[in-house]
Image (cartoon, rainbow, N blue to C red):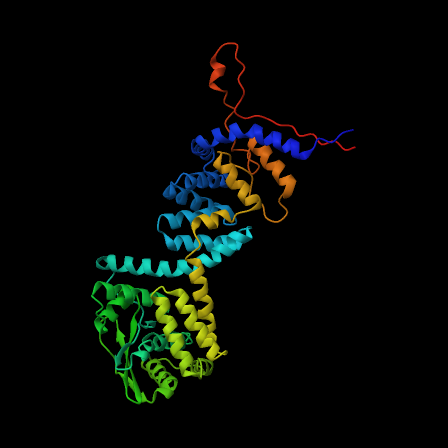
Length: 448
């Protein structure tokens, strides 16, 4: 008894598949469109067609088909990932984020998941900026109705004073107020990054002019009902914080609340302001909410200034600088939890800006990469199985078998089939026995 060497058999199979694979790439999309037409609800056919569209740079078509596939089977990882890639290519960052998050839940390729997690941090900022631009561009078509008054947004405070080193407190104080208001269950607080992106967009469109009127405009654009409009005045030896609630519906400001103290008492002033603003909203805090608001982010003013500089750098897209500022803040106060969280986010954003869609796509492995390879040559392929899918030599032999002799019936259903083998054009000549485009290789392994 003799054993046919697997390596030699695989080499033979590879040589035999080359002409078929090359031909398959040329007519992959028409073949898969035909498969989709035979059964429009078949997930495997939709997935393969979507991947082929993506490879052919038909991104809008890919997005539509892959989103249909993910609706039919939310657990199909390849469909989710390529839906995200296609959405990025057409500029739909919200759909891209949702698709990537779906892949993180159901996908199997570890490297692709790692790249997506990093990419999502950068994508979130891009999404906020894109949403701000779209809101400003479509402002005339927005409903004039303001949001619920308990939906609160906090733009950066306005700084005035001679000590420019304190200017980053514009963002630091606003960030503290957002954090404290978020402790109140009856309030819905607009995320700081969304508000900042919109405030930046309005600044750009009005030659850096920011005042109460533009704050109200931002609130309407972001569908907030109430804006916290504030300022910081730095004088020798003291700092004054001033804030007022502005109703977006009518632009009217409530009674301003003011606190003036030495800079060392900055956090005490901020807490007093927040509690008075909550009182003006007519909200009575629970003991747990009051306790959460009373917590100081740090006892180190220098750490908070460094943190505020990090916010400024991150808003400017300088993530490496932001990471250094946040790292300095947490080194000055290791218990400064917000600084640690922002440091990690800034690092991820800096790395995420370097992650490309090509890199994410290249992170697929195992059965998921096999499904993509099948789609590229016009085959529906097998499901991208999870743990337990054939690996190693078994997976390689299975992949070659699919390429050389594609199944006439999809393993998922009995309704989607590949077209019959097409004969080489030379077969039209009488007496010529041309080779079919799809061949068959039989690998025999005998035990001794």
